[in-house]
Image (cartoon, rainbow, N blue to C red; front, side):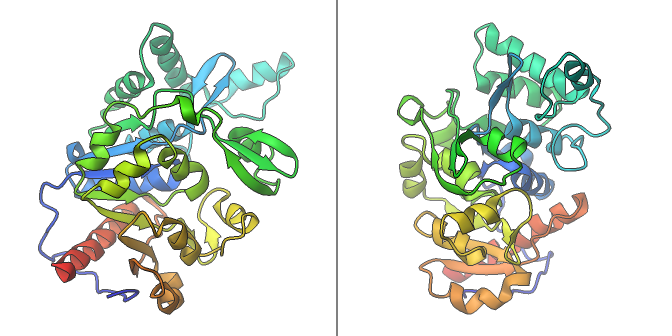
Length: 332
């Protein structure tokens, strides 16, 4: 039943049971979706495979923006804009600026503690997976968070201003340069972190979070054997649109779609994922796309996907759960 708005009855029989859920995740949208998901499903059955293409070195510290955003959001300490820690100060940045350092990348004083602990673990021979587990457990996170790889796997953005690291493009240049392509220079040298392939293959439901398809999801898929594992997985593979009403909710996804010649819409994202997923979910604001969505080889459905606050995140996860339950029942 493609493109049809289904009534949301949250009392519908729960067909999820004790199903294993894996989410390919990156950015604020993924963190908010996972927050809602763990409110309606046992957290210990949820695994997030997190993008590390945004990682950078900052004054000798290894910074993992996507992993940290996910941990802070699940711990309910995230900042007002979805990243960093709420009510943080920037006195360290103030002093660095006084000493002549550039200030384009923002690190708060509370946030700094996360990076110091991660660095200590990495410098004493631990892996990024181990550091992530320590940090997640310290915040009492019950869902499992795995970096997509423990190896350095940076994303570079090729623009009309030259080759930029993702953070240079997104933070320092505020996503203004026009994008022509992306590079993953270490791709032949990286391997999935322990647990990543099993999380994909063993999942009952595999989500492509409402994240940027180019710089949050694709860096994960590009890792050797990951794409094949997705295609071989017996999970119901579900993509969620990060584009609503022709605009990205967060970040540069809209501008990137346009620069790369894709339609800036939920339909444009669905076409990118079409070969990898079974079901695509988009926002009810874009219900006018329903007829167009029927041209795709996958099932598509829509509901309210706007995660404007913590309560709404849970509502959205419940909406998506009901769409999936209906899809499974209709396919049975």
